Image 1 (cartoon, one colour):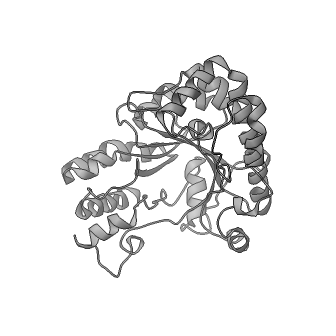
Image 2 (image 1 turned 90 degrees about the horizontal axis):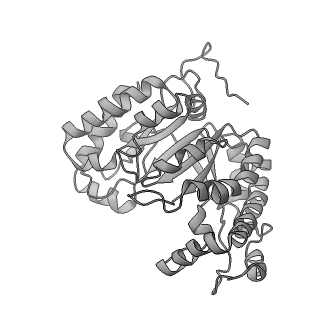
Amino acid sequence: VLFVVDLTQSTIMSARQRFLATLTGHPTDRPPLFKEGIRDEVLQSWRAQGLPADRALEELFTCDYSCVLIPDLYQRPELTHWPQTQRGLSALRHRLDPADPSRLPAGWTEQVERLRQRDYPVILRLHNGFFLTMNVERWESFVWTMRLLKHDPAYVRKVLSIQAEFACQIASRILSEVDVDAVLFGEPIASSHGPLISPKMHAEFVLASYEPLLDLAQAHAVPVIIFRSYANFRLLLPGVFQRRFNCLWACECEPDAMDYRRIREEFGPTIGLMGGVDGDVLRGDQAGIQREVEEKVVPLLAQGCYIPLADGRVRDDVPFENYAFYRRLLEKVCY
């Protein structure tokens, strides 16, 4: 289902129209300008550097509002001992109860009517990633999971299948009550050196386990399917784009390995892109920020299907003066 915007009546679009039109390759009044992830401690630091105490960032810079729905997809209560065999997986099933209303996004009942009448984009997070699904928290559990991939692949597939079935039931309830604009799969599966599993294993285990969720999104005609990667994910990208993903959001990434300009050259102009601005540049001087915007953001905007954002959280070592300079540059090149 393609999202079509009629610009003959008005040149001013809502944030929702702007998001959908941008990522589906349709004309827009301008690209969306979303607020980066900025924690309270950063804002407190910035207030000592000139951010007015009585003003929010949304009042100082152009910020399109968006909403991310985050259902609880973890086992509750947490398992004290992760099951080591397929027989033990019944304990995991009991802790993934789709009928539990607390699994829904916070304040869901109160949110529904408001979300049905919104003018801003809503993104539903559907998957937290392979290693989090496998309960990897420490080195020991990482090693155990890597051994399982080789020595007991049936067990790994079963865990992923249980999680996908559970997530589908939660998502079905949400999608039956509210039309969402995008679904999001987060996959922290790489380091700064590259992926922690091979492309073959990623395709056979991880991407295959996404299929029920992708089927669900397709059945509900969700127009934007976002894959959010972390660090140096580059070797795994071809497999992702062979599935039904049509948007990449690369976070905390290696700028050279995940350079959106080269990704565009390889995978084509219709792939949606979010992010792409090297957060490390914001810590430097304003000349570097200007180069980043002029050399990277401007060409991507010219190609379309691109929403500029810093590639991760803005930390408190970014001076407010630099952040303000960056946001004003974005406004200048987007309007």
